[in-house]
Length: 405
Image (cartoon, rainbow, N blue to C red; front, side):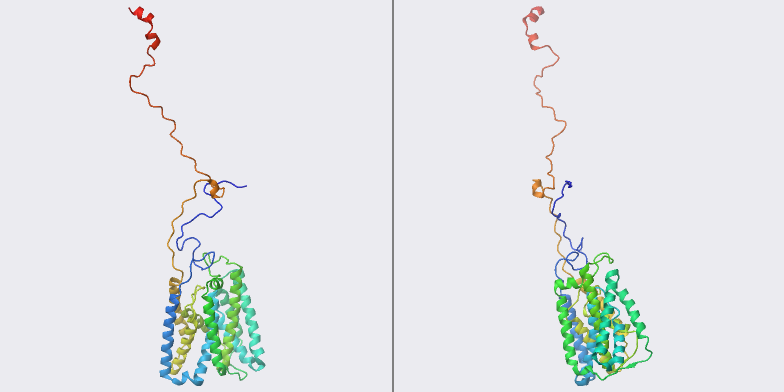
């Protein structure tokens, strides 16, 4: 049964459209997002600065040792950059989905150990098996995050602890079995890595894709579920990032020739720091196009330059510095990359007149009522007649006149 209520209609009532008010909060999605497109000027500016830094490191390394940028030295440098780039892609993909995967470093070390031990058993045994295991592990991790709806960093840190237990079963460095050398296809590896990075960045710049990938980003209450689409995309992000980390570990092992059993969290810090430095937001959703390629290339050039200078540089130190700068970049991206604020629009007045024009729900306003009680009619002030005096017929009667005489 319906009830008539003043001002109620079948259409939504007009409201004041002010930026940052109501449902237009943080995430850029159709229900809870800010209107408009992200501004990419901040990415253009920051990636230009990264390009200048990349060029400066190329110049410094060339001045120190020109052989490091040609021939076998260049091929070894490219393999190192691609290996770090795969880890950065894994970190960047999970960050874009707003559920960072902190287990990528231990997964890379564990995959490197397996590749070193099984390298002489063919590509299927050395890479195929750990890839399947990594996919299953990423799937389980993603299901834990989306089913329980818990923070990705906490769940992935627990997953990293389990992988470290596997790594600690080895007490000494493991020599790589087999003679596969990826430096022979360094050029193809770099082209493939660059293409995946840039195409992924371009796809992430498309509004509908960006909203879909970053839908897991919280909008109000962090414990609020974000829907089935967000759960599927986040789980897929964990699967892909874990497999990418496995490939990075196998590439590092085949290039170095030996794998040291370490926890691998320094690789996680370095990869996440490089992605934040590239312009990917720590809150998820937002990111640039060429930033990851430039940041990873600059990191590889810096490590090569430090080696040429004889410096002992820790991945912890470089990753920590990249994280510190990357957090500042995140603040800039969130401040200047979000859609521009729209001016507030005034509230439109409620509909008046015929109730049928309001969908049959609104009641018409009654006409104003006159004064109550009603005012007495105005009386004439000229020679008023006394109601208690003699009647006119009595006064003019001849009988009364005779008696008076």
